[in-house]
Amino acid sequence: MTEPGDSSLLLIDGAALAANYRLLRERARPAECAASVKADAYGLGIDYVLPPLTAAGCTTFFVATIGEAEALRRLAPGATLYALNGMAVGQRDRFRDAAIHPVLNSPQQFGRWWTAAENSADFPAAAIHVDTGMNRLGFTVADFEALCAALLPEQRSRISLLISHLASADRPESGQNAEQKALFDNCRALLPATPASLAASAGLFLGAGYHYQMVRPGIALYGPNPSPGVPNKMKQVITLKGKILQVRTIDRAMSVGYGATHTATRRSRVATVAAGYADGYLRSLGNRGQGWIGGQLVPVIGQVSMDLLTFDVTGIDPRLAIAGESIELIGPHVTVDRVATAAGTAPYEILTGLGRRYARHLMAPAAPGTSR
Ligand SMILES: *Cc1c(COP(=O)(O)O)cnc(C)c1O
Image 1 (cartoon, protein in one colour):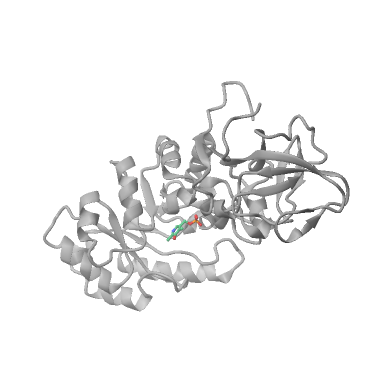
Image 2: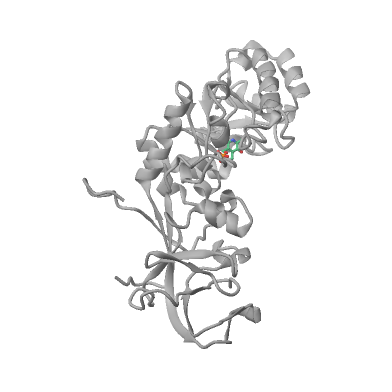
């Protein structure tokens, strides 16, 4: 059936998302399973992602910035929210008003937080992020040790979480995992009563020793494989249906798109779809990407334009490959992982780039007794 409209459609499968959350939570039990929903829930849209996660029992969420946390607070009045980027100058009232826990990344931030928290018993408790080898964000181990040596009991009791982040968790064979864990254990010994969290998606699969009191997966919730090298346990959550705007027939030796990078070797049919690099359909997928229509894969031909993308649909039933129908750009047959590999990038970049122009919809739950 053809559908009206001139933009592509992003379907979000709330049941698959909830199932992924439950799988991760079971794996992490008895640790709490929080959800990382920064960057608008990895590009899916926080409004669509929050209800299924909440229904599945998730109560703690991590975002990057205070702005993201404030937006999430409006949707989740009772949830526990952490802002990973820390507490910058001038943000004190925003953290207080929206009841956001700052994740403190330096002695300066700790001082800023304590200035706000000392005489205000309801100022949000803080998490402390210690950098155990990523060399990206967080207290150095030395600064953390100095902090703990000088910590007052009333400060200690208002630190709600100690976190660190693994650099190589997607490679279980990497010695860096055990090195970071050992450093983290040393740090924990200085704050033994404080709940701790080390693992994100990939770290969760390194074993129970990495779970501590909380895990905070992101990417695995949304479908990509958190453990490259073993079969994916996660369900696909998104389907991106690229709207066909026009289908044309071209003769042998005619070219397609900017720079004429594809030339037809036979009489061909070309479907033009409403998605382009401005929608996060990366230019590197030109002449490399694939779609799915009529039960088979079809190749992207030519360069990806800003708003448009072209496929060779010569072998597809002409009643299917027509304007108003769609080609699966991402979904069960063309997974996020597959698109990322074809584009030479990571699934994170494919998801967080998902265009604002796509019409987003929560997928209707499957009727009882049907399978898909
Ligand atoms: C992004 C992030 C996560 C989630 O990582 P995934 O690999 O998406 O599971 C967890 N913790 C921190 C500090 C992060 O920056």
